[in-house]
Image (cartoon, rainbow, N blue to C red; front, side):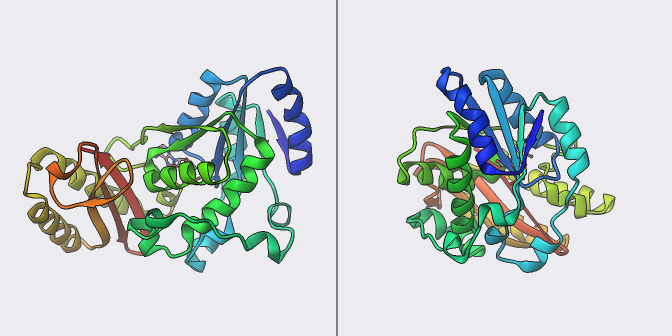
Length: 280
Ligand code: AMP
């Protein structure tokens, strides 16, 4: 694996790959890598000549300063894991490389409904920050295939929208959520949970599974309020628990209101914000 810190070097290296018609798969991350990230790398190595990963903790997508400051960093382990997973290139830019001046942070993306609901509503400006960095990374790597995790389902739809807004021909591959054996969705933020909190955090997935098992035409409202009450009794603070159409994240109230459905949740356990989702 080759590690690059400067975008011009990545571009030069990848130019010949592209010119010989070989495909490039790209996995953008913020580091503190776990098996979820590595599943994206493995998927990319199966279908592309070159797999590029990036590690960049993007300051502009954090609407909470403390979350940014406390974001875990395990660089040496990350490099080892990427190498073992068959990643070819790691791009690890500095903040100045991505945002050389104030102007480079100023673009606005028309995301519409996608940034008004769910994560968009509870994390104002978050998806603008995501688009800002992803547009820059895509311009540097120019991948044919982009690998994203269903764990951040709304982000997947936002990035698909970004790709259409900037007229790029990039195939987005959404990879399944990798979970701990107790069902907890793997996340870099889980490093901040104690063992006891990790056990408790699995209640989030169990709640989604329980709703999926019981949902029928018109009972979602009741299941939602019971589930929120039960989680809050256990000490969670629930930001949202919603049923939505998987295609566009329009919130639906009844099971029958859409053919492709997804349950989405965000909740705090102590100071750690956790998200999860389940197709249902
Ligand atoms: P992050 O480093 O959190 O920005 O995540 C980088 C990529 O890994 C994103 O596309 C995430 O959706 C994906 N990812 C994070 N956690 C998981 C997981 N548990 N399973 C699958 N993909 C994941």
